[in-house]
Amino acid sequence: MYAKKGILFIVKNTLKLALLLVAVSIISFTLVSHSPVDPIQAYIGADMTSVSPEQRENIADYWGLNDTFTTRFFHWANAVLHGNLGTSLTFRTSVADVIAERFFASLALMGIAWGISGILGYLLGILAGMRKGTWIDVAIKGLCFTIASTPAFWLGLLLLMCFSVWFGWFPVGLASPAGILNEDVTIFERIRHLFLPALTLSIVGISNVALHTRQKLIDVLDSEFIRFAKAKGERSLSLLWRHGIRNISLPAISLHFASFGELFGGAVLAEQVFSYPGLGQAVVQAGLGGDVPLLLGIVLFSALFVFIGNLIADLLYQVIDPRVRRRTTT
Image (cartoon, rainbow, N blue to C red; front, side, top):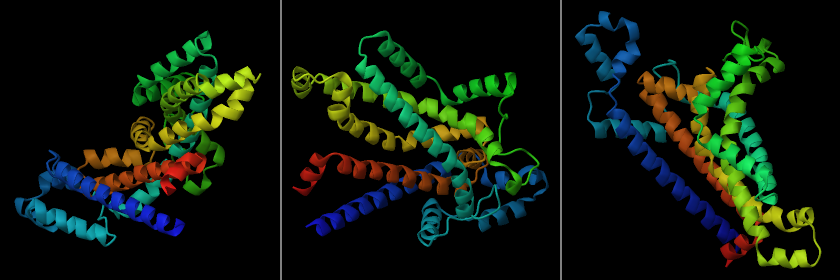
């Protein structure tokens, strides 16, 4: 029975992923095809004035720009199915190589920010829920509402101005000091360059987890079984540890894993502000430079990234809550 259940789960999520990638591919290719950016001019750059109309036409034929929309889409989709994402016009190399190189740079940034924001948001939500109605609760809610309404790029610029320009504690940007080989960069220097972008993403991601955890904890503490536990003499910390943690962990985990899309979007802004050479900055360069293959490749990869986050959230939900496993088995 469990083998059949596992096979159905794999088939179901595989179909979901396939439909998601097909829909994202069609929509993204359509939007990119109607972009006002001229890919030929973006490819040639400053030498555009020295290119003759015949040469321009040859370049268009080489890249298939003169074909119909349907022909171009099916050529691109066929290449993707065979593992070929194309060649980046901006970096003059394989799109897969660019994504692999930039993703590992972004992974450190997003991973640290995701972990810190989840832990801080969870702890702040517990503190606010346990102290409902007090000045601590009001202060935490005010902080979360302020963070939720603060644009990530503005917060990044503010941190950059304070800690890099005024105090000089951290570098202005990049992932390592300029003019130094990658293998010669120390761990300390990498951390210094990573600190402000990671701090920006961490602060931006705190509010949702904290507010949801607070509300769920308040709902749990107002439930009948908590009143019964209080009547038996259990105290606040005992109630939280024995009855509250598991109940409030479920929505916090689901929300945090489901926030992979917001995390990636915030990384785009943070990396642009701090000139951090990650996948987010590559998206901006591809969009402004008309690099269609790279832009489409990153869009597909980001859709896969968000899908995996939601899938992990579903799996953890079943691991933590036995009621979900019983309903699924039934």
